[in-house]
Length: 142
Image (cartoon, rainbow, N blue to C red; front, side):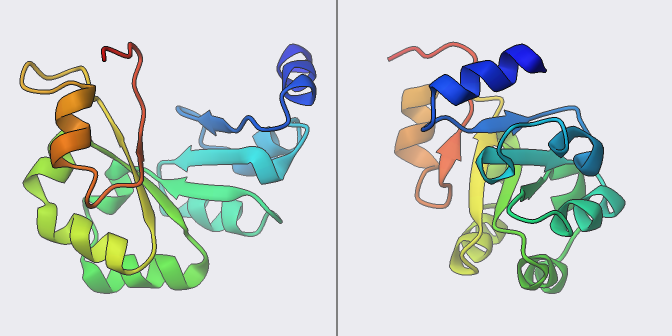
């Protein structure tokens, strides 16, 4: 964690997006600047805990979002959620929900961009970014 914090001191424009960490209070207390931390979280308990931490960006994962209807998504926004994280497959199969999430002013970040045979970065940019804000990719292929 010390090395990560040193790197972030040298790169003030960088943000850290976590995955596989569901303890927002514990992790954010170790990171140098909570305002540059986006935590993908995997259950409502962690989301509520994260929302109590000043300047931390809480990002519910698809495992949370996929079980919610429009009213529950709206409640997340009202609680302070500004970002979500979902797979390209979720975006493909839930275009109406993705459009609604965007209308609420919640930013959607897409992952698994290169995991499916039918998709890559160019495809996602062309067909999915109308309802998404950003994407994660392990291997940029432009």
